[in-house]
Image 1: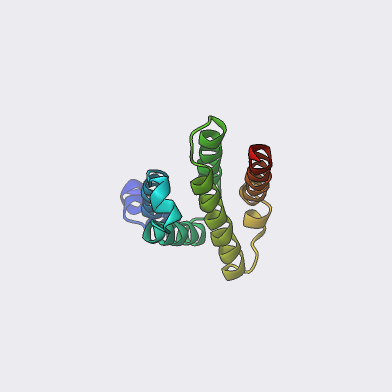
Image 2: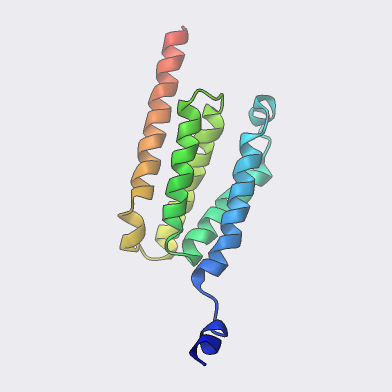
Length: 142
């Protein structure tokens, strides 16, 4: 009898956040697969909007989504470190991650779980690394 009651209960917050994570992964894949010419022309703006909104709503609906996004950010940074030519796209994804995180912080009135998580600090650290490495490569090329 308890099993039947448990199965008929209201779905967990994870059930609301999972489709948003799927949308986020689809948008990430599409942004990374854009050609550099399309990125220069401002292409993929629809995918970037979907990426931002899915990140924001996943952070709002599921409090532990920051840990899933930490894993995603680590994988994105690893693709950059392995030498794939995705620096600009990865940097724009991290800017969108950070913007969605800050928006979620404000909308949730600064929850400690989000602003003290590794996710926020990792986003800032990787953005600094990408900016510094970009300026070093630009200086080295001249």
